[in-house]
Image 1: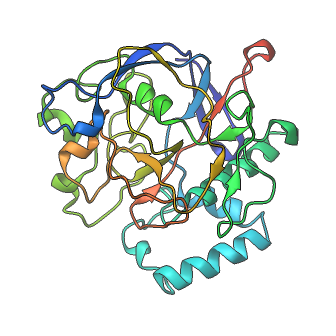
Image 2: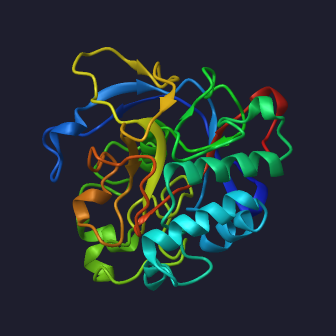
Image 3: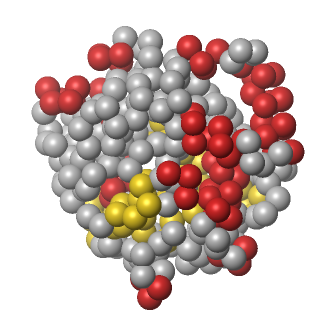
Length: 294
C-alpha cells in the first residue's frame, strides 16, 4: 500500500475504496447479533494512519491550541484527577493517547488540517467545537479532504486488509498475541507503545486491541436486506450527546472476541464521554486528482 508523511509525524496509508462484506457470518466464534453481515461499498480513496494518536502527538496539539487545551485539561482533571488516573496505563510518550472524547478527536483533526495547509472549506468539522453543545457536520463531509475520524466501514475495511476471516490473520486466536494487546497478554495492567506488535497486510498497527478507537459514525443497526449499502454521509448531520457514536478494535483490558474485525462494542458510547481505554486514529478522503496528500 502507498504511504505518505502527514502532519505531526503521522504516516498515512492510502487505500482505494471497494466493496466488501461488513459484519460477521453466523458461524463466527464470539460474534454478536449486532454484527449482521451485509455488503458495503466505499466509493472513495481514503488514507488512514498506521498507528493510533500517541501521547506525544496529542501533547503537541495541546501546546498549540490555547483555550481548547485549557478546557481539555480542566475537564480531564475533573474526570481523572491530578495526576490523571489513566497515566498508570498509558505511561510513555509513544503510547496511545486516551481519555479523549469524540469532540477532542475532531478538534485534533481540525488542527491537523490546519497544519497541512488545507483551506477551511475542506475541514470536516466546524471551526469552533464546544463539547457541551454538540455540533453539525457539513452535508459533504466525506467529500472534504481534511483530516477526520475514519467511518465505521472504512475502519473495518482497513482492519480486514482484504480478508474475510475473524482477524486479518485467520480464524484461530492462537496467533492473536502476535498482533494484539488484550487482556490475555496485558493482564489489564498496561497500554503498550504503538507499533510494538506485527501490522496487518496493509501496514496498520494496533487495529486489534491496545485501545478502543473512536470512529466517525452515529451508531445504527445494520441493514437486514440484501442491498449493497454505500458508505456515504449520514442523513443526520447533528452530533448530539444523547446519541451514541461508534468505536472499534477492543483494548488492553477486554477479551479476545472484542478484537475481531467485525466487533462493534456496546451501544452506549456517547461523544462527550472520556474513558481510560479509548483513543483514536486519523483518516481523510484523498483528492486523487491532486496526487498524494499532505
